[in-house]
Image (cartoon, rainbow, N blue to C red; front, side):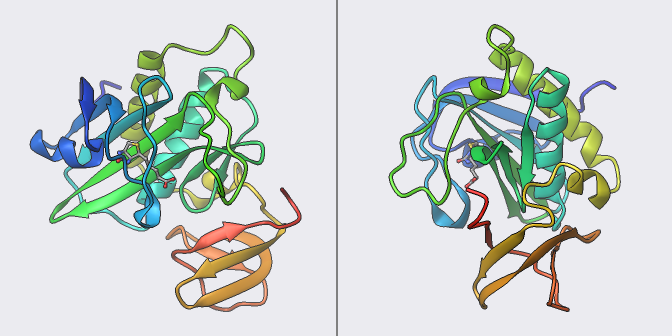
Length: 226
Ligand code: BTN
């Protein structure tokens, strides 16, 4: 499939999630470094040159609840096809190597359009007080098999294009889910919940044993897993 995206590679910007808005939709903006990289929940995303891949896809569609999950699935598919092993998806939009975070996704709505920002560690960040251990892409590949940066970005963009034209498949996402069937804690704005992580529904919402409601946002932990 020919990718519907145009890739623009720049040296630096504040945040690719913001700067990509200066381009037409269907642009992917990839920066070597970001001076004000953004993470989820108002956190910053440290983005020095050489320490990570930082890029954003500008989509001519509205964001929906499954967009971050299908983007994470695209990252999983692309990196696995390139030879990575032991990658997992942590609900809702993190990419883990074993029990360690190696990347994350920030999806943002801008009127009728949206931006999917993807950050992947090339070096393990030194973040004091991170909620879980951190790692980087070099761990997921055998020595000497780490693809070059352009290959990784292009493959992920290609997989995103594939995922975005399909209906989200909860089962596919779930087959790579971290902590499935484990007892997890979910922190939400409405309180904390504990139960067995049963999976997700077709909207990407989290299903927890003992709760009839489903959860669309929150921060997931597995105290006995890390
Ligand atoms: C998270 O908190 O896990 C999401 C991190 C998303 C970081 C990426 S890096 C490229 C894009 N630009 C940003 O400012 N943030 C996203």
